[in-house]
Image (cartoon, rainbow, N blue to C red; front, top):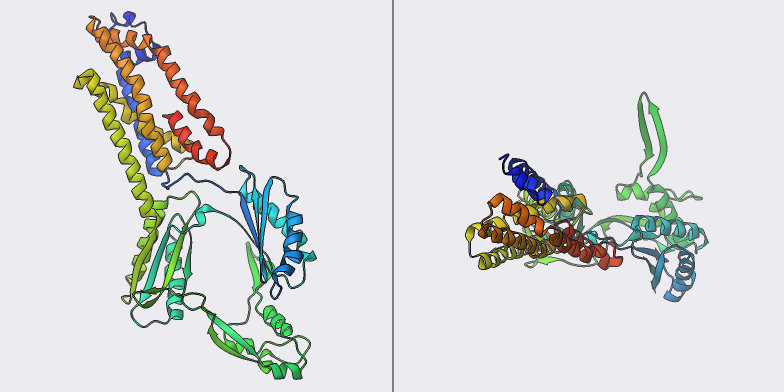
Length: 476
């Protein structure tokens, strides 16, 4: 060994690999282990996670026509929001008793910061709006809020819509929300319990009471007021005054301020249900839908599978319930990702066939492509460092990387093979063959990096999408 070392005067990386095969093998295995660990921890989604800086403001003005809403609510809000930094566009839609204003910010704006600034502007303008305007609903558009799983649940045991909805709210929703990666579960359909107050017009007129007086009394009694905290020993205890309304009789006993009357004196209070806005039926039976939303950045496949398992476990305790999946984003993502992985394996297979076609030697072919699995697996570790997910674009980038990386391996291996045919020893041929092409391979690699790296700094939605694609190619 000591006699051969002086002859290895080629590329330092190649010479170290030849002299220290055990070290290089351990480093290679380390890369494979890191890549496999990263693969297990990466989230799986259809597309890269991206944030759209759009904030929506909805305000209700009951009883006002569209023109009044536009002039007295929408226009002042537009003028106030127009002063926001980074604002790109404002659009408003005013209808009977309601207006919705969309504020779109330039790409790259932090959505959370934009939401806070919009909320501050609306709250500052709130006292100047008409008294009848209700509290605003301010929320930002989040693509992750689209349901990843939607199931229909029906009962064959004669449960009413109210009973079925209560069951889903009390049993199914808590079980689903405990699943890792699930942000929320929402029940749609069925009947919602509501205490109805039917005012007696004749008695209202005889006592000279306005409907708003009854409404204010009910709102005051239904408030859940905080009273601060109390210190007991080493514990801080929060104090609250809960509302007293649980049954229609509780509401009937509520006093009307400024009078000796109660709500029951001027109205009939009954336990009922809210107006039905839509119907869901499964095979002719009344049913409800349960929509599941994932947390931002969570694994779509794991969250969907966990939520569906939780739903089936709860449904198993009620034989009269049937569960039908109508939409499963996790299954769709899994199918798309598996398809991308198959394409990547096909690319690797065709790369092996092309190498064998030129070398016509199995041993040289296997040596040339031996590094490909290591490169592909180790790239997952780089994806985890940059906070990327496994999606269609990142897997497509890996497929492209197969061809880009195998080019250099073929050229270097062919040069080594040529020198061995000229009579050089394998170690010498490997050292000098790699040294001869070191600068050419480096230039080729830097060319690929220079072609894809600028896309990492692109802006807008296209920049967000192609950022992950370019990072994977550069890392590979």
